View 1: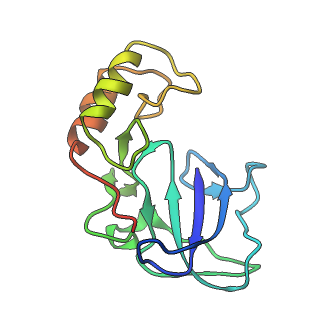
View 2: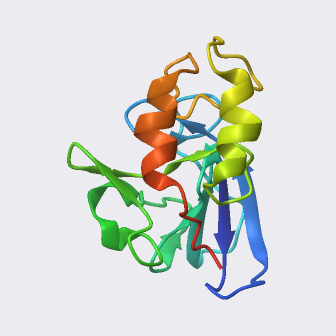
Length: 160
């Protein structure tokens, strides 16, 4: 996952910092060693956090997050209101997640994701370039289409 820090939530706001990180199965974002909390080399202060993940729509924190040496965690998963925009997250079993289905990574879920990404990969096992595996279960199949692409078709990222 790619995590960005921004000083403002306006279109064209400059990115203050950007880091690649691991998104663990429990939803925690950690440093590339898989265990340390993610940290940024920035001046302590408040920033908007933006999450970008392959084949998912980008999301941004609704409010600024305090970032310092002992930075706490920002929990997107606890409520829809944690993210910027109108219903930008998807609830799955009481946990809010970033929406999947964006196979071509253009921050929109549309027919291009189905026809140019999912359809040619359907029936294959996961590989590094398998952006059609929307549910990240290791296979590209009708579950990706029906449970992840179809319900989100027509949606787009609300990150300015």
